[in-house]
Length: 369
Length: 89
Image (cartoon, helix red, strand yellow):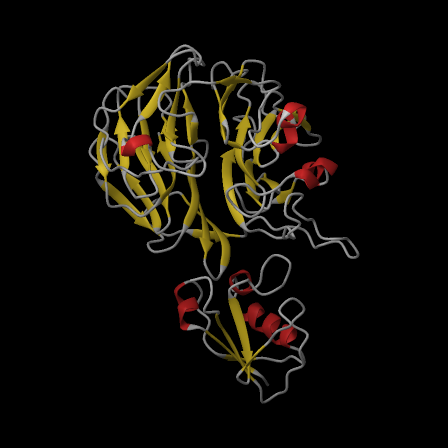
């Protein structure tokens, strides 16, 4: 099978050739697809929709461009009678006890047929053992007292957007929460510990800035072949871990900016990672209107600023957290932007090709191999 | 029997023509309609059983404000219309 890109957008799901930009299939045209995923273990494609009126839906198929089967999306259990609603610790607003958005959809390990993990807003993690037909809220995480310190970041309510299943041991799963820091289970979700120490929150000072539960990791990735190595594009910069996400160190310089959402790590080389920088939190556009990707090959000491083939004037593309993807070889990458442009590279970013500049706003990009 | 009809925009997702159903409350009437149309429930109600934020239910021309419990009594001659609220589009 020729590799293709699976592109979830605000107005549909597309599969596109990374070599020439040809659109192979179009599904859910006009509907918001919050995230899409291909499970190479089973050949299932999944699309999570977030209708403006009709709520969150989950569909699956083994043939793009054909019929999709709608399956029940994850559902929160009934709200316990007599319980006080959860409230945002910063603003006091009520955090809804219901599915607002599917924000992460990840296959389990090779040894867990049918297992999927699903991260949602307002912060529930769900798992399925039958390819998404039935979902269970991971109550061990939902019931952690520390969850009451979680709060919204870019969205009103907290959410789980990153899920890393350890290739060595499928029972070790590490998730990142905006805003709630990094959490890890060693026992397939039966119990959870806060990890991600060393992440720094810019709006606080002293020890409070390092409170692990107050962190806003925008996206977290794990190196496939050296899985103790993680990278995080955080609200306040770039961080890496070499000890299994227990602790992170901050990278202070990375080309034009350390702010952004997306990050990709080379599947074999943990020291090689890519980022899509924007000016800062309150100005989410490329620095000087010049769209670039930054790449380190030495674990963050030095960054290449990659711009060949990317627009260098009046470019206001922002790359969302699921919008930067890498293939299994580590040579091909692709990224899509909020202004509907899509670029790909076959040489680790030295040269980029524009695949489209007319797509809807892009939410997620993934390689199908 | 109360009659339940649905916004035409829903037909793109679920085939759900107008239907007459039993029910003494709005919830009973809707649940009886849902049992006739598999898959429809999640397009109108959230996972806690309340109306989706941007949906509305009109009973004889009046929007129901009891959006969580849907406990409003309904009469056999009532017309129930499920529609998109103008918010949220």
